[in-house]
Amino acid sequence: MENSELEQLSEEARARLGKARQRVIESIGKNMDLYGVTLSIGHLYGNMFFRNEPVTLDEMVETMGLSKTSISTGMRTLNDLKMIHKVWGKGVRKDLYKVEPDWYQTFSDFFVIKWRKSIEMNLQSLQKSKREIEALLDEHSDNNELQEILKMDVEKIVNAVEYYDWLDRLIDALESGEIFKLVPKTTNP
Amino acid sequence: MENSELEQLSEEARARLGKARQRVIESIGKNMDLYGVTLSIGHLYGNMFFRNEPVTLDEMVETMGLSKTSISTGMRTLNDLKMIHKVWGKGVRKDLYKVEPDWYQTFSDFFVIKWRKSIEMNLQSLQKSKREIEALLDEHSDNNELQEILKMDVEKIVNAVEYYDWLDRLIDALESGEIFKLVPKTTNP
DNA sequence: ATGAACGTACAGTTTTAACTTTACGTTCTT
DNA sequence: AAGAACGTAAAGTTAAAACTGTACGTTCAT
Image (tube, rainbow over all chains, first blue to last red; front, side, top):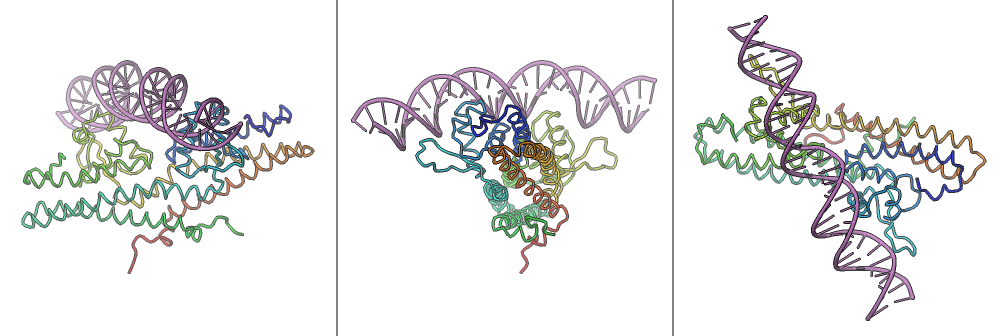
């Protein structure tokens, strides 16, 4: 646990709290593969979750028992995903990090960062290939056999493009908060 | 390509179509890590995407140049995610697979299958640890120092539970199709 | 019933990713 | 300006996964 806040507490209470926290930490860590992060980085995030103050690399090296490099790259990964943030400490030389406490925001950022990029890449490929296949269609208007096949390809691509367009708008709704109109944060009485 | 439909076409047209398809296949495959599948399984999916008829394991062994075992496990992974489906062929002994053409459905299924399970696991851990920490709170009502810390932990857990509840309802909206009220499939004029 | 075709477990191998140690560039202190 | 503290690149090592070949159980045809 290594949480300096708890030093003066009874051994028993500390152990019980540690166990309760550990369960959550492991559960969070284990499920963070959905965000494409490795188990140990998920674990790092989980450990930061219960810290009430920003942490340094060295502190997490201590608690996690990993090398400083591992913690450093883990922190960067989490930072890139905006799951944690760098924090300015008063007179502190070391970098300080804290978890983003708003998980709705974290969820939204994940899609904005990872999915949006994927959508863009796919759309570019789809559009380019669509143009090429349509050119083929044009050039071989005599060949019925080929027309048949090409038309199916184009249709598939068109469907895919439509889907990505929808996905893009869905992420817009997440980003803007419009999503909460449909699915409110709290189920009101 | 190995697409029997194209046998009688000109070499040039076949090559150009192959290239156009290949671009899409690779793009799809590369971005399927968002669904937690490996590059080669993504590639397998991409290759199935342009097939107009259900495919067999052996056919995909042929096109992908992988072992039958790899294709078999890949097919199972994709099938578990409902990205492809087993299909009954008339007099065919071999298993037949085809891609699910409705990508909105695929997207929804992904969350229902993977995220829902993750939510459940996390919720269970959170609830259990919350009860334990609340018990600690109860037993140490004299210790202000401890109370302070425990209350922060409980608050964090409560926030997390709320978030997971929201996420669960969001997935409900995906599953039921209610999401399309907010984000329609097509942007109508 | 017997044999052939098919898909998958299993064990072993190769490839990839995670992690550590060392070294280096930067920044801050004095 | 010099030196110490800090975070990260780079190279090397260890651990994990992806992949293959073989062997096995099932199913279907004869």
